[in-house]
Length: 422
Ligand code: NIG
Ligand code: FE
Image (cartoon, rainbow, N blue to C red; front, side, top):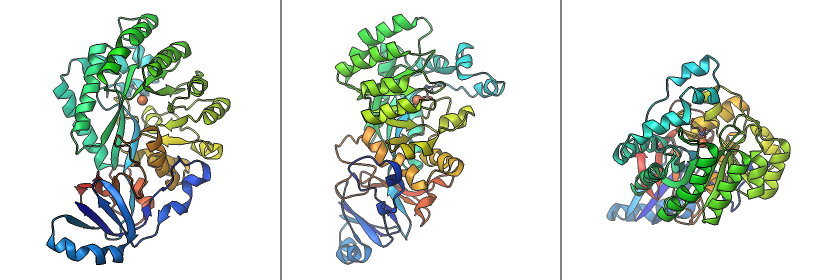
């Protein structure tokens, strides 16, 4: 089965084998001018050619066989399928009431101490069945897809015991198997908070000796993550958990320096983790160490948006010339599922170039959240997975300028047309 997308407007290709850094993130050389066609064969991009030549080659055949699907992009811009490289999709309950506590001046840690926060979501999540959690996850992923995401990293972390962490990872696997939802890259985040009946020491011990081997045995997680932050998991516990996880064959990720500089950046560099996320308060020295160690930084603009705190300095990352990504960090405290909205925070609030923001959640995100097929994604180039979005506008910049609604007209995932408003 071939799909021919003809009369494309500008196509943002990002045809590079390495993540983009610095000024390369906003170099217009990554954009093919209007007038091209994208030929897809068996889930993969086969060719990008002039639209007229594709019409000559395929239009008459398409009229006599159902093996060729023609899609008229009508001059609309095309961008890669978006990759959300940090989310928490599977959980139950509702923490909307916490908004008033925030407005009264209570911090994230104070709300947790008052019985809200992660542990309250854990109790609500534990009471739900696999089926109930699956339905919640499906709804959320459908929204993410509607906003252009074709691949999503998601974490457990609302079970906090072996049985319930495994339950969340199983739900993620079922969602991944669904086929018409964004693909899923699963991460074990048992080290998300300390459960009510444990101390930091006893829970760290349980994570290492009990949860980790069970999770690894299940094969349900590709990576491990730790919420490394004073008040949650300190540097010693984080190091212990991550070193053990690596020994068991998992890739590593971290939540660091969300509320203060807790030294997580240096630990991320020491361990050479794939990505260290939040990173609001990371020192310049630690950022240099991360750059030298090849650690990507994950910015999660929805979180400061929802918490009402300040933005990180995105422009400084461009100057640093180190790889970075943006992701939604969808979670009960920050219910952003739209990468275009997350990017709007950078572009319309922080002066970041729209091509830079797009590179951050496509090609750069692909390097820390690879596609399970082994093929490239987050790019539009020959041999890459046919995951792409046709926008509503003929101008590619529109991809992050419609906060509150989706800029996408049609999403093609694994070569199949899913949302179709054209
Ligand atoms: O990445 N900060 C730690 N974990 C999540 C929030 C989890 C929650 O508040 O439920 C995050 O923002
Ligand atoms: Fe997170």
